[in-house]
Length: 394
Image 1 (cartoon, rainbow, N blue to C red):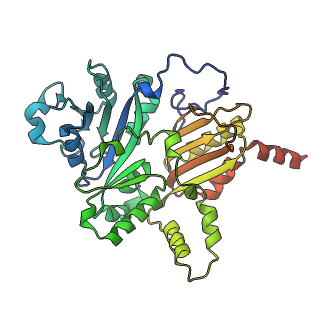
Image 2 (cartoon, rainbow, N blue to C red; image 1 turned 60 degrees about the horizontal axis):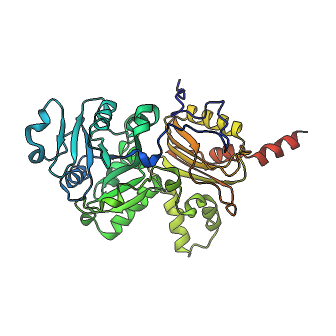
Image 3 (tube, rainbow, N blue to C red; image 1 turned 120 degrees about the horizontal axis):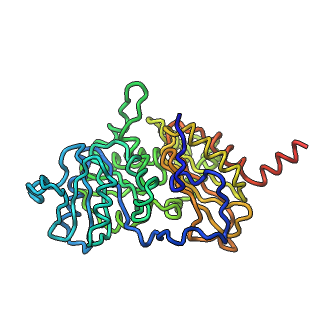
């Protein structure tokens, strides 16, 4: 049986939680600005992670970056760069540009705390999950360990994809209904570095981008060659934050209605047909569902709905994120972030503005999602829906 954890960092929906605009959150808790941002890098062997990490370790970018390596795959740092130093007991190597590389032998928490306690502070930390198909266990670390949560924050989950071969990986069928690792990586990502675009035609490239967006409609796709990218596009982007993540094209959140509107058009409307084809292009069972619901939510109803949903679908819902407006909470805007059943929830630093419509937004990314059930369950948490149902029952 999958249970939601009771750690308040991991399961803030556990009642009694009824935050009010005037409550004192935790004066001792550091703000995100005080925490070291962390980027988690995923991607199949050959996608270009090695090249990207070496660019970072050797680059003249003016930042002090720590790269945490693991040993679950081929060594992905330049052997000539670190030489035999990787065999040293400490396994923390300082590069000429001040950046640091350290290996992980199964204990990510220890590696992070080692970096935290070093006298020289870092501008950024990169965790390369070579050989690990699922970035969720790494992300969990930042939800469930208070010491880590106080010192670090996830900046983004970056997936490197090989433009020439990613389609083959995405279409690969696994035995016994197992999750396709490449699909899982794309689904979890906030940003996707689509590398080696020089090896495909413009038409092939567009097909790959469309396929990626059919799985993860909210991820920003950055096209590169030889993993050369302006680091400001992938570091310090706060794309894991709710406010940034939900700054997506409103057409995504309205996609279902838009689709229904064009389904009845004439066969000659190529734009509409392309949109329908793109929406239905699904070789993986993994997709994104966006929900908009205007009005105030009932906290207890949302708590019950989300707890039940994530308990029963812990494996199939990869990511969930949202912005919510609760009854009796004034102008406080609440943000929600979930990785499988591990969730982080609390008040945003940004308030609802006087002229801003109170529109709740939720995004689910996962496998075999039922849009009608998700939207119906979420909308049923609106105070107006609850009151209407109570009136009808009289």
